[in-house]
Image (cartoon, rainbow, N blue to C red; front, side, top):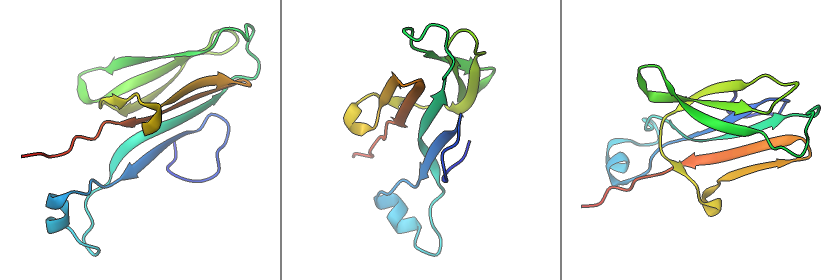
Length: 123
């Protein structure tokens, strides 16, 4: 996995950023920035040699042992490929296309993009 750079076969990209709100604006500044958090992931997985090209690969989310902070995303495509899995942050996903969700399989590439829900502080 990498944060930025040129995409290569089988790469997963994650986006990081800082929560900007009134609390963080009062406690942090340019010289002392807030800690970065993972805001979402982009998976581009190449399957050029699938036996059944009409059947799209699938992903499943699994519990990561005793950890509540992370989970496992597993991609299954069928022969001749073995499953591939990544450990990701365990947060609720934003499923809206307008907010960056994408799950498509085209030209032998599975694209799974998602961002995490952002909860705004309200009194």
